[in-house]
Each structure stands twice: as structure tokens, then as C-alpha cells.
Image 1 (cartoon, helix red, strand yellow):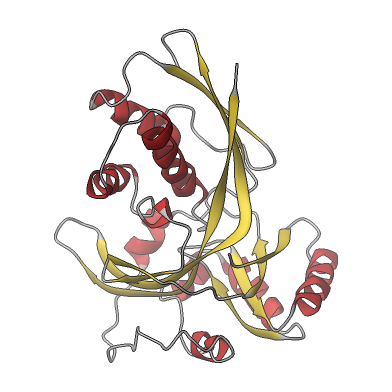
Image 2 (cartoon, helix red, strand yellow):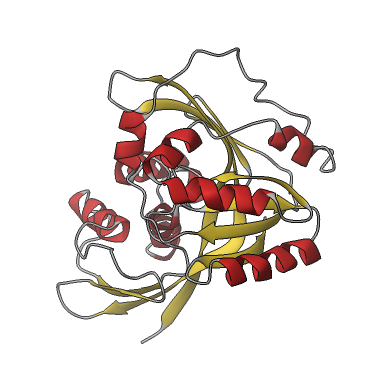
Length: 285
């Protein structure tokens, strides 16, 4: 039986601003989001039978609930709406992106598979319908429908036709952050309006701009999980590092470096200092 292979890319929140809490319980968020070359590997094939087979493999397969993951939710929703009827699938997802890290692995899995089903099953879903389905699965799923740099401005998605070419070091300190807990503990502070828009034509100025921004959830995450603060400070101290912070609600910490060699050198030092932590060098797409 023919198998299709899909790459499911990792999301990075370069900045994150919590504006206010909405009536529906969610928050109004502004963020500059990019994607990097780190990805999960999805292998999908059509099978006979009445049930789908979703299998997680790889380093970060643990902790993913069998019937409550984003892929299972997507298939259930597509069948409920009768977009997919009789056909069943075997889906193997090799998890290279840590679960519960703020790197959007689960959201990306659902997003790329939604695009896959729309194309391969000829669902002929329009863009706004795809967006609505994605939104029902999770907040970050619509963002991951396109692997393009994105401004999220008070929850409105604005795509950017510009590559950033940033050298990334990603460190996962083996902590699964509770997004719900961090948002509940976070206190929204009134502050002057941030200048969300930036002239992105000059990549040389981008690191300086990003350095002066922040992730509003970082201090809350550090208070709950102190080891996050320690790794952020250690990444910052490495040669050629412009800045370091968490992505999303954590616990993955990112460092933006001046060049690839400095990034690789920092990775070696961090692996020596924190041998149990997962650490990878990557680059924005």
C-alpha cells in the first residue's frame, strides 16, 4: 500500500505579548512567529477496516494520549462533518519535537494533515473552512497551516513574505509546562503599546529589534519551573548569542546567535554542562 511522507515543522514564538483576557476565557495575544527546520516526520497510508491506526514513535512519543491528541481530534472532526466517510488510515508520527515544550509540535501535526486530507481526498475545502476546522482543534493549529513567518496581532494572523535566516539553538530542559497553569498564574500588566510592526526588510537589524522585545509568560514560567531561568541565562552567556527566552509558554528555551559556528559551539558547551537536556541547532525556514 502506498505511503505518503509529510514533514511537520516546529513553531517558534520570537516574541509574545499578552494583551488581555477575553470573555470566552482565552487571551488576546500578539506575537512574532517563525518556523524552523526541526520537524516531526509523518507517514500515512490508506488501510482497510473501520478504525484508524495512529502510532507515535521517536524520542518524544511518551506523554501523548492515544485518543486525545490533535491528530485523533482532527480525524474525529472530519468524520463528524462527513468530509471523510469510509476510508481509514494508518498514521505513524515520529516525534522529533518535544511534547509540552511550546514548540507547537502537536498543532503542526494536525495542520499539515488537514492540508493533506484536503488535497489528497479532494475535499475542496475553502481557506476559511480549513481555518475554522483548525481553530476547533487548537489555538496554534491555524498558525501552522502555512510555514511562513507570521505576525499574530491580537489573535489576527498576518503572514510575512520575508525569510529571517536566524541561527537557532533550542534547549528542552525535560519539563512539560502546563499552559493552563502558566496562563492562570500570569498577571497581565498594563504597559505602553508595543510597536508590533517592524521593517523586516533589513535582517541585520532584526536581532536588535527582537532583543528589546520579550515573552510576557517567561517570568511566570520561571517562577513555576526555576530551571527554565537557569538555562536561559546560560544560553545568554554563550559567545555570539543575541538573546535567549522561552517560546510559547515553555519549557523550550531558544537562543538566537550571530552565526552557525557560534551556535554549534554553544550546543557543545550546553550538552557538556547539561547532558540530560535535549539541545539542537536549527535555522529558520
